[in-house]
Amino acid sequence: MSKAHLELTGVQMAFDTPTGPFIALDDLNLKIGKGEFVSLIGHSGCGKSTVLNIVAGLLKATRGGCVLDGHEVNEPGPERAVVFQNHSLMPWLTVYENVELAVQQVFRKRMSKRERKEWILHNLALVHMDHALDKRPGEISGGMAQRVGIARALAMKPSVLLMDEPFGALDALTRAHLQDSLMEIQQELNNTVIMITHDVDEAVLLSDRIIMMTNGPAALVGEDLSIELPRPRDRVTLADDPAYVRYRQAVLSFLYEKQRFPGKAPASEKDDDQEQSTAETRRGLRAIA
Amino acid sequence: MSTLSETTSSNLVGRRLVRLLSLPNPGQLATRAQQLLLPLVGIMLFLGFWHLAAPQVQTSLGAFPGPVAVAEQASALWQEHQDQRDRADKFIAMQEERNARILEDNPEAEVRIRDYPGAPTFIDQVGTSLLTVLAGFLLATVIAVPLGILVGLNRYFNAAVNPLIQVFKPVSPLAWLPLVTMVVSATYVSDDPMFEKSFLTSMITVTLCSLWPTLINTSVGVGAVSQDLVNVSKVLRLSFWTHVRKVVLPSSVPMIFTGLRVSLGIAWMVLIAAEMLAQNPGLGKFVWDEFQNGSSQSLSRIMVAVLAIGFIGFLLDRGMLVVQRRVAWDR
Image 1 (spheres, rainbow over the protein chains, first blue to last red):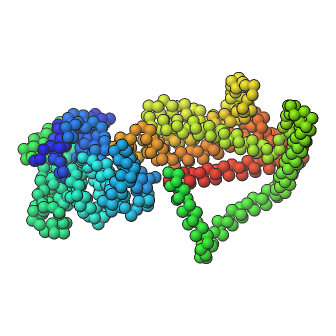
Image 2: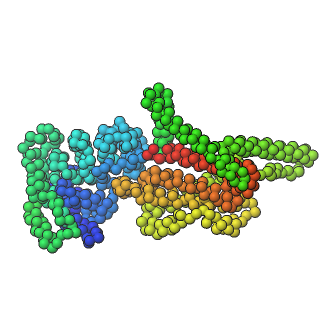
Image 3: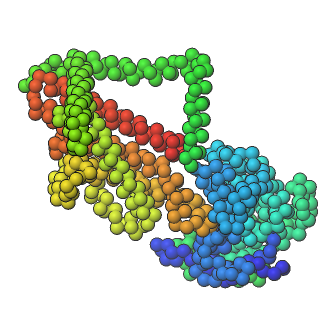
């Protein structure tokens, strides 16, 4: 593995609930190299978003922590730009102004006015949204708005790009289109990316590594799968590729055989027996990993 | 943001023009006729009912005035205003002539022009009331919006202030009035006052009663800023002020304006009551004076004032709507 660029060590996250603390993550360890595209996959409620929010600095781990390029992450910052599931553009600003808000804030001192303008246009062109500069988010489709969200994040020149189910709210065709765009951009910029997804195909197609998380509560890394498919990847030819099918199979088997969706036992009802059994599974899984 | 809304509003105007100029199809024509016709029918029916019912109501000042009597008084009031203004002009012109003559004799002489001492007319009273309500409303806005932002942003502050808001919100203007009057006369002491005391009393009473809807709506709007947008702001490390200016304020503008419109409506209602009770110049005083006057025309003149109050209230709300359309991004 390449030198650790981003490192999560012994991360525990407990949320206060009326029935006592709820341990969402327990002793999660993860190292990510520079330029790696990593997907986090797991069932709903397994704490994927919690991991992302800890890296983003929007949540503070109760134990352990996150180190980026040798600096501990304590608060949110533009070097860890986030693409949210629902584009999160300011509805009162145009496409251009939304990106401008970010560029203005991050590069106010380092770029001249003209450079900033060029940089904004460059990033919007990168996501093919330079034709709708003066449109408001309400006037463009969800897919287009998500492109602008990505442009805004890229415009901050982040050292890690965090994406929280970026394509989850889009229809299948738009999603495929955006995935291709993202691969193109990734090829060009070689960013470090952490992406949360529910979609097995998306994870295999885009990632260098897939981190599969066990079911919460007290979730941790179940399996860590490297995807060694040559780039650029093409979704049509890959569909028949035996390696691709094998990777896909591995993820599916983790999600639907080893980690069946729990659906039962909400956190407040767990008793000692169950806790013991999760602890056992955890030990077993650590052996696998 | 202002340039932005300007372009969109000019677009809107353009689109509306196009729609007006293009020949409407029969269906559109029908809906437009309906939009114009139905309100007209309603007004006609109301006038008819009023005309028939008014003579049935006998008071010590004669029968309740019908629409015709009221219309007559409306034009009489306008005529009085014109006459008064002519007289005032003459009065001033006379003084100027006299001053010119004095100055001719003695260029060093100190000359003065006295204001026309006549009683304010109905139109003057409308002007006074409008000025007072706008001043009171403006003061209320200047207090309520920043305070609302603080209350909306800070959970602790909200918890501390909320009970006060809930208690003061339902207080009637009539209860505030004596207190405000006493406090203003005690504290606003000056040889050359910039404002009349009566103006200040009315204005402050209006402010006290009308700031609550804006305050509450602003705080709710600020509290309801989407968590995603707040997260964006955090990731960008926006400073507190930039966060308020670029995220919180625009996001809550629609709610703030809803509050402002309610506030302005309340301000107008409160002002009339305050003027009546305190005998402060304005429409309320006009109504009260006519009531005390008790002539055969008094009821008609009061009715003119009632209609004027309603119409001005309506116009104020429309004006607010126009401002909202220019400023708010969701319209």
